[in-house]
Length: 239
Image (cartoon, rainbow, N blue to C red):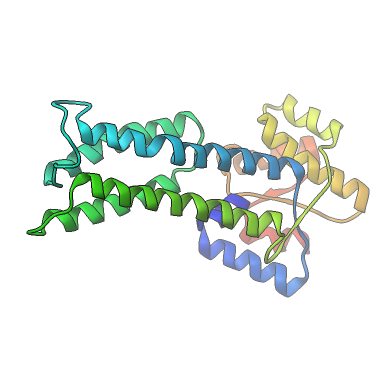
């Protein structure tokens, strides 16, 4: 849920949930395990954006699949769009392999295609070297935005989120692992169990992860004693 908000995903559902939190005084807590997973994934993504993405694109534009060319003298052409298309097939495959966010890559890909489309139609074109400089600035902007949005939401506890100090309940964690729930997911959910035990308050785990969590909701409730649901149903389970 935190990452969806940072990335601007599921906006209508997140807006509904935020309104519920505000209007009904619901505490929305982010466990230590969720914080750590978010931080790790954001770091991997920004590292790839800053250290790898531009290099991969430049290598393709310089001619990794054919004759090499000097970008300082080369001008954008329609063929460069086909080269970029091929490059992003490789980039998106790497994003999946290393469990990175795809949204920043898509934003950069869209910027590149739009910018190249514009350059191709111009009579006086910039060099591909100049284009790469503009690309570098765009990558930096996207990296900064991702880090800033996460910091604003979680580190500074912006809007509706508060950090929790709870750690996973060992019994619930073991039960969830025993039914095949992934280690990280089991840790997140069993941290809610700790909150219930320590605070004596009703609590649920909200997520957009249907495949790994929500479709196994009944099993998780039976094993770990915690309800998991999509954020739009959160209020109905808290009442």
